[in-house]
Amino acid sequence: MSTSDSSENFEKKLEVLDPSQTHEFVAPAKRIHDGPDVTFFLTSLAYRDIMTFLLQLNRAMVPRKTEEHEENSKILVWELTPRTGGDFVHFSAVVKSLQRLLEKLESLIDDAPPDTGPRRFGNVSFRKWHRLVEDCIDALLEEHIPERALHFPTLNGQDQASARDELKAYLLGSFGSPPRLDYGTGHELSFLAFLGCLWKLGAFPLADPGVEERNIVLGVFEPYLELIRHLIQIYTLEPAGSHGVWGLDDNSFLPYVFGSAQLAPAISEREQTPIEGSMPNAPDPASVAKSNLVEKERKRYMYFSAIGFIYDVKRGPFWEHSPVLYDISGIKQGWGKINKGMIKMYNAETLGKFPVVQHFPFGSMFKWEKDPHAVPPPTTTHTTSQPLRNPLAPTTGPKTPKIPGATAAPWAGAAPKTPIGMVEGVTKAPWATGRQQPPPPPPRSRFHPSLSSQSEQENGPGPKHGQLPTRAPWASKNAETKPER
Image 1: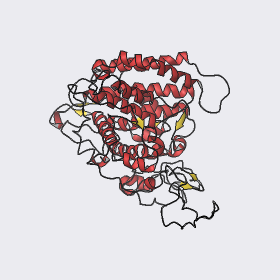
Image 2: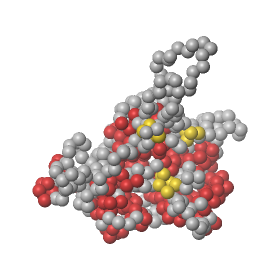
Image 3: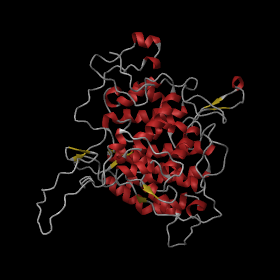
Image 4: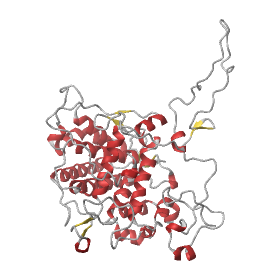
C-alpha cells in the first residue's frame, strides 16, 4: 500500500481473527538482515497490515462533524484527556486495563533507580529496569490482557507458539534496547505492532467507526509516550537510528502523525481523510517555534506534546536543534497538508530504512510473506544504498580459470567492485555525506512561491545568498525548485 492511497482506502481496517477457528501462531523472529530484505518488507503482508492499522488510527483522530449538513454541524475535536476519559471520549475496559499495565511498568523505575556513577552514554540501570519487566511480563499480560485474546485458540496445542508469545515479543521490544541503552522509532513501531496484535485478536470491543481507535491513541498510545519520555529522562537513553539534527525527532515519529490529524479539518464518516486545511481555531503550525505557545497547547494536542518534550530536553533556538520540524512549521496549507506529508515521511524514513526496521520481528500476525497485491517500491538512492548482508563478497562475473596444481596468492585475483552501501571501506548511512551541510539560517526558510502568500513572497525573510534552507522532503509541491536567492 502506498501512502497516496490513504484517502481512497479510508474504509479499510485491520482484519480481526475469527475466534471460532484455531490459528497457527509463530514466535516472532528477525528477518531483515540487509537492504534487499527491506525492499521485500515493503511488499510484505506485515507492511500492508502496519500501514492499514496506522491509517486506521490516523483517520480516527481527525475531527468529526456531528450533522449531515455543514451549516448545522458541530465539530468534535479529540483532545488529550485524563486517563479517565473526557467529554467525548469514553475509554473501554480494555483500554483502562492497558493503562494500568503501563502504570505498573512505570512503577518499576522505583526498583531500578539510576546509577550515580560516571558514565558517557545511557544509564546502566535501564538494563535492570528492563530485566524487571521481563521477569513480570507474563503475569502482567495475564492480568491486563483479555482472556479471549491472550488465550486465542491455537492450531497445534500447548507445545507450539501462542498469542502470548507474539504479544510478549512486541511489548518487550517497545521500551528500548538494554545492550545499546537507546530508544528510537523502531521501538515505537514495535508498540504499534503490539496494539495491532491486540486488535487482530479481538481484544478491543466492537464500536462505531473510529471510536475504539481514538481510545487506543488517546488512552493507550499517549500514556505509552509519557512512559517512554520518563524512561529517556531517568536513564538518559540515547537516540536509536537517529539522523541527528537532520532527523524529524530523536526518538519518536507517530505523535506527529496522529497529532497533525488531530488538528486537520473536520470530516463526516463518508468523507475522505483531508489532505490540506485545518480545523477552526487550530493553533498555527508556526507556533511550535515559541516555547510559551507550545507550553499552552501541549496538554491538549499530541503534536504539541511531542514538541514540548523537545523543549524539555534540548536547549538553544528551535530552528537550530530541530530544523526539519521548524521547516515544516512554515507550511501554509494547514495541518491536513502536514498530516499527509508526515505519513509519507514515516513510510520513507521509518518503514523504509534499514537501521530502523532491522530488529523488527515477524510472526503470524505480522507475516514475512509477499503481499500478492503489493506494488514494488520505486528504486531510489535510499533503496540502492542500503547495506548488504555480505558486502565483501566478490561480485558475479567471469572467473579466471585456475591452473591445476598451481598455488595462487590471495591477492592475485582482480579486486571486486565496491559493494553498494560501502564508502571508503565501511558501511555508511545513506544520508551521510563527506561534506558537512551548512547550518540552517535563523529565519524560517521561504517555501516555493506557490506555497506562500503574496506578502510572504514580498516581505518574508528568506535564506541569505549561498545558504540552503532546510526542507522536509514534502514541504513543497515541486521538490526540485531551487530556493530564491
